Image (cartoon, rainbow, N blue to C red; front, top):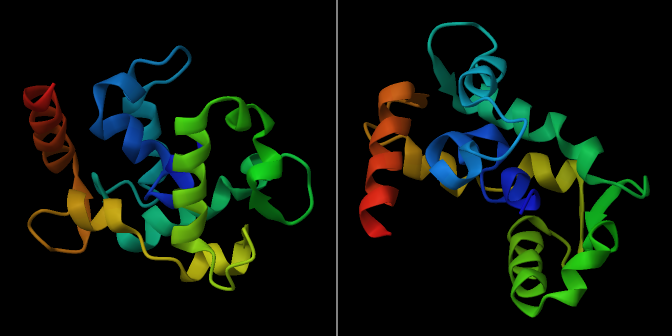
Length: 141
């Protein structure tokens, strides 16, 4: 689900970390990594990760009301599992618990996927860390 890219630590790192996301039509994992790597040093810092996540906000706010909510994903209501996951993702970043995530709330929200990807705890996610997570995900399948 696209919303996971914002709230769950989102962005293209999800696509890079998990093969299923990386193989969606129109997605180039190398280009996605390069886009997030704003300074071109070969890794994505926490700041770059957060900036890329926030940059996707406008695309996720499909109805233009200044917040991301279930209203932006009407088809999710047709699939109970998708709706439940959407509610979980919104709840992770919804600071005032109104069922909507504003850009300000997103900026303050935790980034658990980044923490999981940054296995050496140096404050950046390298391509080798992404590759290791991809490999781990492949073994779990």
